Length: 123
Image (tube, rainbow, N blue to C red; front, side, top):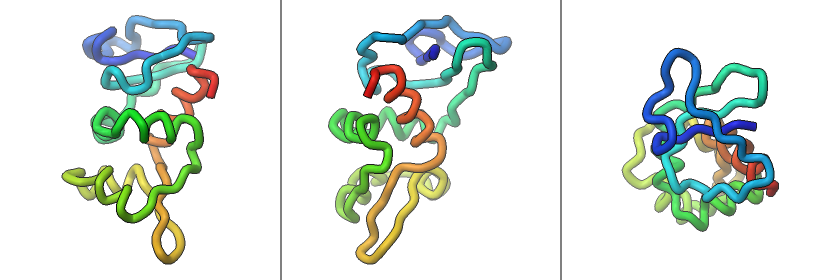
């Protein structure tokens, strides 16, 4: 699994970015804005700016929680704090809810990013 972030790669160009193998490493979760990831021998998957920006804005505790358990639920209060100031499209693309009272879970590219980071960090 390879991972690129803006600090390491600037911008992705011509289908590639500086590759950093993260197997067995302890990648600092969210220390840099993520831009893309890929598995060996597969094209880069560029993250949408909304998911990348939102990931960067999450608290370190919430990022780690989502990496440890991608099905972790947030209460209405946690969700409100987490999405404060976010665009409607970012919210509808990256979060889902169930039940009454509502419980929120990460979805879309934000969940994909949490899955990749979990694989990289071994969580």
